[in-house]
Length: 458
Ligand SMILES: [Zn+2]
Ligand SMILES: [Zn+2]
Image 1 (cartoon, rainbow, N blue to C red):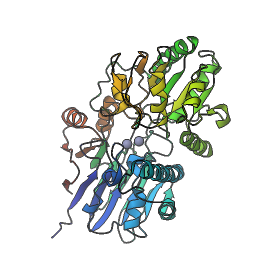
Image 2 (image 1 turned 135 degrees about the vertical axis):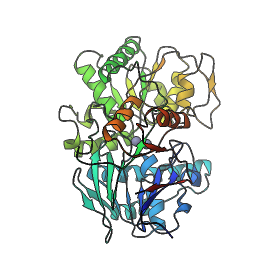
Image 3 (image 1 turned 45 degrees about the vertical axis):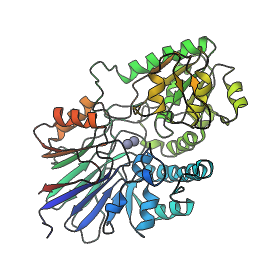
């Protein structure tokens, strides 16, 4: 017999790793899912969370934001549970729709070119079906989400990307806050996360831990990093080279192109073209549509200010592009093989006058991490059908523009909230260990991995 006095939290993905985030809460016989993403480093059925652990249709789901590690498996989920209702913020719904349609295109291409089993996991029709049942709610307005269930949810700005939210759940006798991905720093376009009202007592905090293993004692401010990056780019452009900035299509791209444009307008950088790729441009239009959600002091430029990057799978396009100084902001942010940033880097690393500047978190298993740590002469493979290329370029660096809270910020979130229980998720094992040891604030802590269930007594 299930006790009415406990809540079960099960990890389907995103526990013990930064993976396919998907968590299930069970309370009084009701089941709620928090996020349902795909694993950024896996392909085919492997990239899904363990949805087979769901043994009864969920009653509702919530999505924190549009990065695919949080929303990429939603159409697969909704195919299995017809009519399953979900909730997210107004801008996130538009972003999620765009990201999921893009996933279909990518999966269809990978199925054709590399024969990946199981791809596509869903099609454009499934995305449309998912969107029909995905409802939007405003920030800071509590709402009921499940008929007959005496519970309310509320969205609280998470400061990560446009529309990103933390999810506050007032369940019978117990209040839970799931942070999703958060940042306290005011970025160029997005203000920092809001804290839940002072009068709200959080019993259980489910908190991301991405940067738990990253020492931030000597971190400069966001502005310091902008000027460090500006100096690096200026040196490259003045030397006749191109600066490549690998960036996520959602969030980092919109931030960075506006920062570069501002630096040009202030005379800190020469006026060269700023290139962006297709998905980053599509998301840019959504930022434009929902610009009232951006920081009020941010200058958001029209998309026409930025050039469209051509087909970088065509070598002549790359050769032409790299002939004249420019700043190129291209996906993927971690430089996954076979993406525009990898294709460009493949040519750029053969010369010494370009620069490659990472501006976000790099997973140690990624090509970006390997390139950042490569010694001259290391050979790396940028495209799976091409032979490895020897790295001559030395001007490769990383700048701290993360849209994730630093570990001191995460610790301060915990100190403010003072929860009774803390569940650490969305972090590598080192990050989770550090967080559990150094930020627990006397709470009962958990860091469950996929397949594990934590029981919280009310
Ligand atoms: Zn994210
Ligand atoms: Zn994430």
